[in-house]
Image 1 (tube, one colour):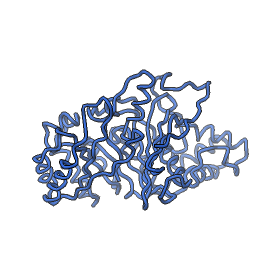
Image 2: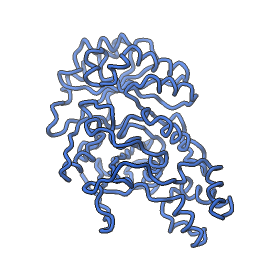
Image 3: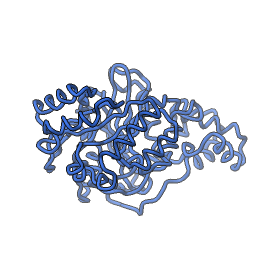
Image 4: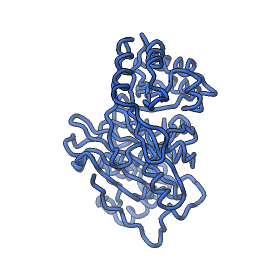
Length: 392
């Protein structure tokens, strides 16, 4: 494991882990606005509209987040525009790397002291960013570190996008070992429930997939949006006519257990959640990813594999089994490998496409919420940890 240098924090800006402020949304940022709104904002500041395209080209096209590097802008203009449209949204607290540099995780402090995490993972053919959509999470899944922290607030469009732009810059620098120098995929599987922050997540998706300089120019097919099963939002997503992948965090095929593991199931049961997921697949032609964290002696029984197989047989769905990433103090543990293999065998025998997620980042608290929980613990604010990494 490599622990990257901690970015020094000015004495005038105390560490927000110990100095907590009331949650509040950040100031307006370039990434909150489409190109027309950027032009309007620039002209309102007394500058010609073309400056909006210049700023956008730096930020989205060249992945430049530092105003000092925007040398084609006159100094006075640069200072004025960046103060109004490029405020600092993410302050790094800790960055860590493992897997010989192929996996990198960042812990960020937001302007109000909230903590969020991002992960970058490199493979021979792609680089994937996993980003947060909320500070904390209100879904209260008991095996998830973020779920146990509770919800602090939604992230703004720009706070989401800025994570991706930063990670795209890391990829472009060649720092991700053995991978192409370009970010190609984004998964909304970091902290938070993306569909609980619906309008901002959808706007962030559009910003990420709009061609530069208005956006980052990623393919919609390379974006994955996860949910624990907020059925009304899932059906709203169908109407968006996007071609992103929908990932459903199911974790149990029966209501009795899922009521415990995913408390929102007490409102929308397994059958209703799967119906919405299948309707999304039918509308988009995109295979739904069924996320299933295997937990020892909890949801890994052969009969549950058989039930899941019956529910998914003949459907446009793929099961992504997740070996649970256990942490000290948690009662939850990963299923033994023989149990995992039998679960996979039964699903495949039922005709269901199934893979086991590549586990990344165990050395650096790679699971969602673990780094933030650890930071809070070190600051004496408490915190627990447990599940969920990053899908491909």
